[in-house]
Amino acid sequence: MSKQLLLFPFGGNAREGLISIFAINSIRPEWDIVGFVDDDHSVHGKECCGIKVLGGRELLDAYDSAYVLAVPGSPKGYLRRKTIIDGLCLDKSRFATIIHPSVVQAPDAIIGYNTLLMSNVVVSCGSRIGNHCIVLPNTVLAHDSSIGDYGCIGSNVSLSGSVTIGSECYIGSGVKIRENIRIGERTLIGLGSNVISDIEEGTVAVGNPSRAIRKCAS
Picture 1 (cartoon, helix red, strand yellow):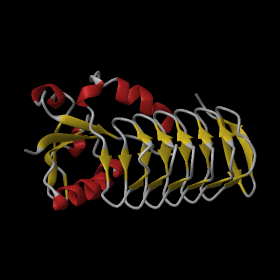
Picture 2 (cartoon, rainbow, N blue to C red; picture 1 turned 60 degrees about the vertical axis):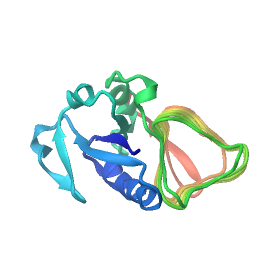
Picture 3 (cartoon, rainbow, N blue to C red; picture 1 turned 90 degrees about the vertical axis):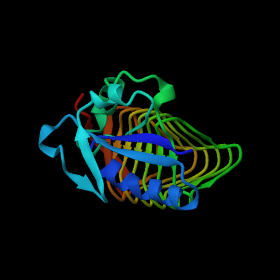
């Protein structure tokens, strides 16, 4: 029997997440997608791929048996993800984890709840992805790498072995990170950067090789 699912909010991550959910259901019906939930009244009634925005977060109580995939976040708003998700006041048992069927996951890899892994992601041996994370297509986590809670990882990102990314980070698409690198929490790594040395927490870093250009606005 399929499980009911609400998607929050009506943003790019949730809409792209539909591709993974449809792919899962094409193999074995698992999710009954109820609709999108969004606090912005201007998007109520809109739809994506036949799935409508039904209303605001009051629907989380109205559909109290439904699972929730909460995937807000962008380069401009990634530091607010924790506050937004925690503000839904949901028990962790309410959150869904969505993994596209094409994902390669080692038997000993750990993937947290309310985490979305899109197509062709590789999570290698000994690696860990935390809770409330998003990983876009074609990204590779080599052995013993980890992504902290509330992380957003772009497409075509490559983490070499034993890379540690702190919580609440945003790693832009096309970023390459050398082995044994540590990236502090609440850090943004800009699009296409090559990271060959540790990055302090709360930093914006860009370039090849990447370098810190400023501290993140809190």
